[in-house]
Image (cartoon, rainbow, N blue to C red; front, top):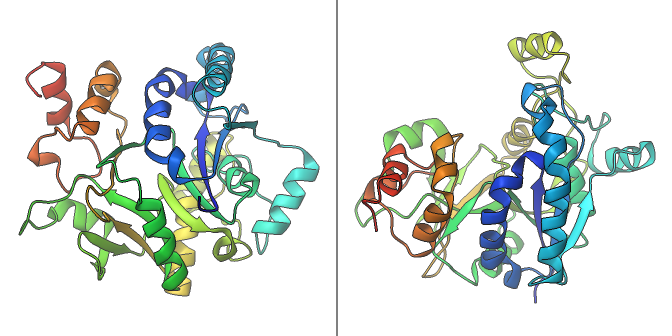
Length: 315
């Protein structure tokens, strides 16, 4: 077994989807990583979403569900609440940052400290982080080993992620929307693989050493700074942007790749509220490799895909 930590970030608001998504995520990755680490952030932000009563209401059922999962199928599951103590914050900031103290949240009220706490808490040098809402298709059980080999051999690759969206059919071109929005730099030397200068915190495998002492706490652009002040939020640039800056500065890349058949790819719900109505069916269809061809090459779940499932016309 390799020395990789699978690390998943959760908050109380994730509880309704966690009961469907976490078993799916563990089924994909638990056998590929020798530590499974669940990080729960119980500290509210100033955003309206986390300030509601649902945050508090979901804490107990979320914790009960996680501990039942540990007692059942995953006895080695490590469950940790984010430690915001002064001493831990000081040690983390000193270990990870060149300058600055790691803030609780970013300018939008989104997670900041909890991302780095998950990486910092992992027992292994290599950490595979996934957000609570990510879904995975293909079913490869060797993708992590392939990614490790790349990270160890290619010093220009900062992080590895599964291919974004189901693989394109032979001779198909990446949709122009996706190419323009996420800016793949070029095709890597592997089939179905792309290099990016833009980092994503949705899913990534990194070596801690390449992150530590290479980034600093940053302010966002002027508009986001003003919005943060008006919202009484923390006026700091989000981690994704900060790490993207590191890649550009070092001329490193994020690599998305499919790997050996049956390969691995990922999907993100992209805030589509209709997805929660068909989430079990969506996960099932992904695991069974049943999806519309229009979804190929697209990392966010399409409305068409959701409607097919909702209308029971797909499968």
